[in-house]
Length: 266
Image (cartoon, rainbow, N blue to C red; front, top):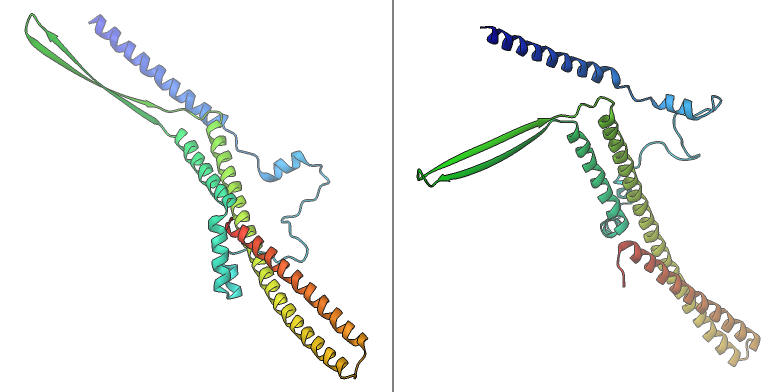
């Protein structure tokens, strides 16, 4: 009877100590965590008190608001949209930036998983044979474990917040790289189109100066103009032909720049 009473008291003592331990951990968990400082508090500590920080930064002459992904539709040029889409699909730097976003997103999932209880299990089977009694014994063991790291000092929360901040930064970097590549490709597309128009004008000018030279030569043979007029017509044709060659070179450079953006490597 005494032994039963002693065992009962010891069980109650263990339960009391366990309750006290859980209560202590809960108090520490609730009191030790501090709220992360606000943005204004961080700036106040880092900058002099006389520093004036505007609510938002905006370049002079720029329009407010975010840049949409469908801004190319305003040009109403399906071929331009196709070219930009090809550049976005083939650019290796943009692919790397997108991969970085995915990797950082996985780090958020990992940080969140560390804040959840971890469950582990182990199963084993033992078979013993007694040759004297000619029988076999099978023993099956299944062990389950539950572990949970209390985030007393906020380390796990800080890791999660840092991962979320990294993800936001990576996503903004990717969005900037995507918009920048699209804008650069559009500029290269318009530059190539402009070079094609200039080449067409140079070809027309060259044809006109060729005709003027033929007319000047005929008038010289007829004695209506001097040789100086023929020389001037020839010089004008030579200048037009030089400009024509420059226009061809400029168009080739513009096309090559566009091909590089599109990933059309030789």
